Length: 330
Image (cartoon, rainbow, N blue to C red; front, side, top):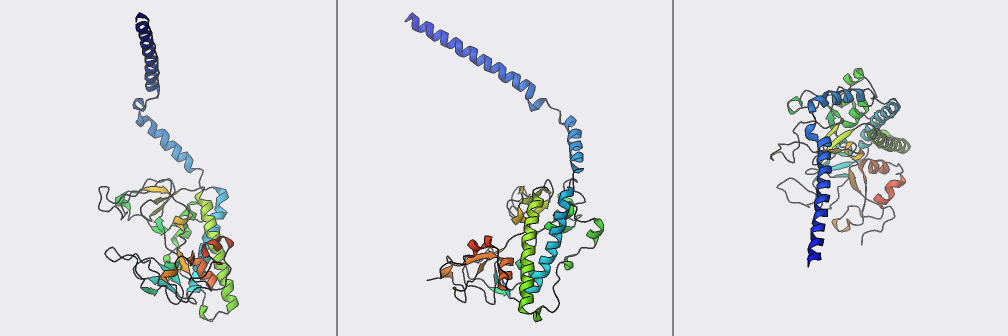
């Protein structure tokens, strides 16, 4: 009995010594590494100096040709799609962003409609346009990349330009004089006399448009590896720069406590150049796509579907999505 009590006392002593040793370590660690002892006012000049020195590294000289190529490809893409739209019909839903490349829209029940309208209904089709095929994504135009964050009351003091164009300008694709010559109407240009083009000429335009689409997306992907861009988690707002703006424009949480503040994450190529996936009709499919066969039909980006209907050959990476060799509906 006495031995057992001695063993218990010895064990308690060891535990006390070990806990006291750990306590000293934690006290020493908190003493020398605690953030409570730091003076943020002394760190602010150092942080601002690092930001100014970082701005000297941009634009990256090796990425300037890539940015210029992206701008040229975007111009060719807009011109090619505008020309093909005069020859090939495009239908857009009246109540949702759905698009269909063809004379008649499909009857697949995927219309999300308005807030008070029933879901999963048949689409109501109207004639589509350029913005239905190439979804516009705009961002604030900054004087330089590392300028102060845009406040909510400053949202009308900055120009809104296409996000891809803003990314290329920050990458050094052009100077301020070229910026003053840009206008939204300059993007909407097409080849004169598109209705009288021969089939060979139409195929050539479609192939060039599809090539410009691929060069544009590959170039934007390369630029996003070097230049930062943000997109909101809950809406499609894009900001080209190291940090997002503070304009409260997010409609998802408009009536919540944070009053439309965006929640930013890193943007990718699909955020700046949306592919706009559409249903496509294959030769083995019926003339009008039915809701019963939605599991058999293929998909494709709207630009790719538009170009392939004009005679261009789709890249092999889209074949799985397009279900070229898929079975027909039962």
